Length: 440
Ligand code: HSE
Image 1 (cartoon, protein in one colour):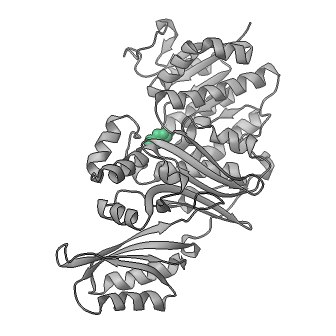
Image 2 (cartoon, helix red, strand yellow):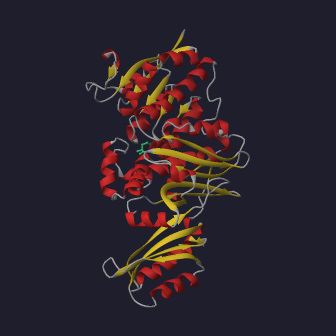
Image 3 (cartoon, helix red, strand yellow):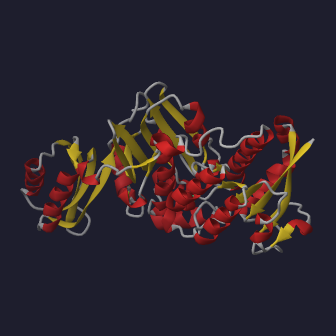
C-alpha cells in the first residue's frame, strides 16, 4: 500500500486527538483512502508530558524545522495556534512545497492573504476545515456542496465558549462570571478567553466564511464586533418573556454587491433552529439562492471533533497527491484571480429591529420623553414592558422597536443617556427574525 508521510506541529489537545484518530481509525481511513498515512514526526516544546496516546519517542522533537526539512513529509499539520511562530512555520513549509493543514482561524483571518497567496504561487494545498465550526464540515460544504449558489445570508453560532455561557445563563439563570470559569475548565476557551467572550474568535471565523462565500478579502477591522460580557440575566429573562433567545451571532448578508458582516449578541425568535443550539455546540445557517435554507450543526470545539476536521483535510490532500494534482478545489472556493478586496457595509447604515432596556428614573412623563426622542429619529416602537419599582431608584423599561437605522438608534440612545431621565447606559441588543425561509 502506498504510504504518505505527514508531520504534526503542536501536540496539545487537538494534536493528541489527531494522533488518536490516526491510530484508532487507521483501518477505515485506509479503506477509504487506499493508502497509509504515516505520522513521521511530532514537534512540540513539551515532549515529555504523557498525552494518554502511545507514541514512539523517536518521532518527538522540539524543533519544528526538522519537519519542514524532512523530504518524506508531504503534509504538515500546524496546531500551535497564535500568530508569529505559526505564520513562520506555515510559510516555511509552503516554501518547501509541503501542503499545510491548520485549525488556526486567527492566523488565517489576519495573515490569510500572505498564506493563501504563497500557497497559490507554490501550487500547494491549504486545509483549514477545523478553523470554523470545529468538527462541522461547513468549509467543505460552502466550497463544494453549495458551489452552485449565491449565498444570501449566513448566521453562525461559531464560538463554543460563548454559546456554553449563554446557554447556562439562559437555562440555569447563572451569572456571566460563574459560567465563564466553568467553560474554561471544560477546555473550550482560547488561551486568552477575551477572544471568545468579546466576539474576536467569532469575527476571525466570520472573515474566513466571508472569503469562501463571496470571494472577498476582508479587513478584520471592518467587521463590527461586540461580545457577550455585558449580557445580564435580566436581559435574558426579558428576552425570553418577549419570545426571544440571546445568541452570539456572526451575521453576513449580501444585497446586490453590498455585503454586511457583523458579530454581536442577537435576539432570535425562540422557534428559530439556532435558538435551540445549546452548550458548546456550533451551528451555521446558510441561505443560498438555489438551495434555500440549510443548517449545519455539531461540536464546535474540543479534542476529537476538531481533530476529525483536521484529518478530513489530510485525507483530501492525500487523495489529490495520489491523483497527481493539488488544489482541485480552489483554496478559497473562488479562482485566485477573482478574489477581490471589498469594503463591508458601514455599521451605521445597517438596519435592524432592536431590544432596548432603559434604566429610567421613576417620574411621570419619562416614557413619553423616551418615545419622543425615538420618534424624532424615525424609530417606531413595537412593544413596551415596564416592571416593578426597583433597582436603585430606577425602573427598567424594556422596548422592542421596528426596523430602524443603526445611526439613528445610536443618536437616540446618546440623547437619552445624556439626559437626566436615565441613570445608567441603555442596553441595546439587535434582533434578527429568521434570515431565510425557515425557522423564523
Ligand atoms: N475557543 C473556541 C470556541 C475553540 O470556544 O469555540 C474553537 O475554535
